[in-house]
Image (cartoon, rainbow, N blue to C red; front, top):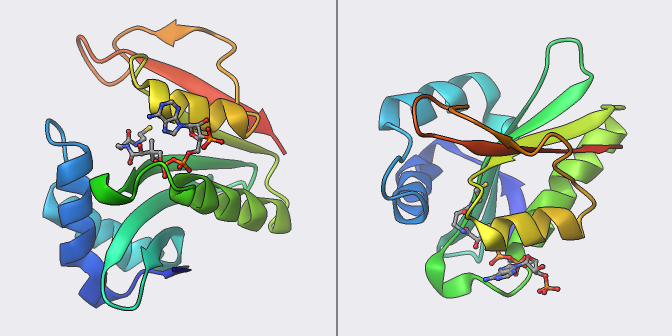
Length: 147
Ligand SMILES: CC(C)(COP(=O)(O)OP(=O)(O)OC[C@H]1O[C@@H](n2cnc3c(N)ncnc32)[C@H](O)[C@@H]1OP(=O)(O)O)[C@@H](O)C(=O)NCCC(=O)NCCS
């Protein structure tokens, strides 16, 4: 399973991964498309040569100081095999190489699997739950790690 930057032809599979991982609130296709147009090297995919099994989408602030991990998803059947960790480690490796100071992300407070993954990588949520972070009723934990 290799990690590589996304190609245009990957967009339908990425969309499918996203819809299965976030059935209540997937990215609209046009958002993913426009993100790809601007930042294709900031979408990393896990490719077994035939299919994609996960993706991570991240962005670095314009001053180059903070990397925001905006989305991470592994296909249902491949979870629990270290793939989410691999994608996150690659984002952190690239961020260190670019001398980014901090990695940040948000996560649903009830998403234990994701929180355990991020904590195992050293991220922590110092400010507790941020109420209505993504609008009414959409609370999130803000997690971060100084690199
Ligand atoms: C969260 C997600 C990306 C984790 O990916 P994954 O490939 O299954 O995770 P990994 O196998 O790399 O696990 C790494 C660590 O995460 C934690 N973890 C993963 N799944 C877990 C689970 N079901 N319960 C508790 N901890 C879990 C463990 O600490 C694990 O380390 P360990 O294997 O040494 O115990 C995956 O479950 C997913 O795609 N979920 C749906 C989308 C989502 O919630 N994305 C995150 C949004 S913020």
